[in-house]
Image (tube, rainbow, N blue to C red; front, top):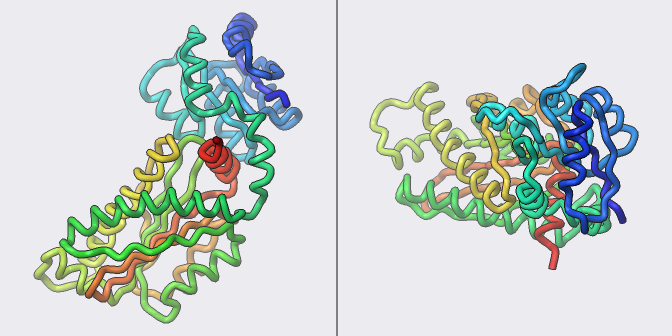
Length: 334
């Protein structure tokens, strides 16, 4: 089964040079696009699996193409090939969902290295496995997501344990693909009758994006403050600072752990306070527009001999599922 590759560049010479640089033993079919608008039309018409994308083009540049791919939910792995080698350009295309960046003129050995690094040479071979994953998670796929999360949450738990000088109880993560209504029910099931405060932080990188949601039971603040040696009076401002401290530790560490295992870098947005001292049902109702159908990974942290209840949910967007499936398929290869 051939892999369909789309090369988008306004230069005919650049298109031909890149096509000749692709591995000769790679079973591919190559199509070309002359500018960004042409590129988007051919992605919709041909459904290529790999896109090699120039940045500086007429009518619609590469940045516009990446943005349109995100906005329109188009599924294609994108490698940017450009003469614009500014660090900001590299960072920007990665944040927009490109999986890698190659400088012009294209070096064939570097191209082969990137193809091998991301496992896209064998994409067609893995297509049957990815198809088998389907819309719901089969046991072996759920198992590998759980194992990836186990490693990442262990690193996060270690940081929290060292900070507070406690023993952190690590659960088995709960992994599911959820519809919007199911996600609401899952969130509401967390301490449904308790007052809760929540923080949400977005992340994006390598074709994967989502939000990390941290919920801390309000009854936990007193003991968290004590463990962090805070001696003053607790008020909303202090509790918000404590909530941010905990979220920075857990969210940052678990995303770092996942990114290393998946071999992709995540950029994190600014944390957003979803609510303080409210029922989880009210918190969900106020923020339900933020979440769509998603891969949800739930982790409930506990601290031995302390009344501290902290839930962390990683919510990956539906558009991220295909990229995650290919990453998992690569890990499952013999």
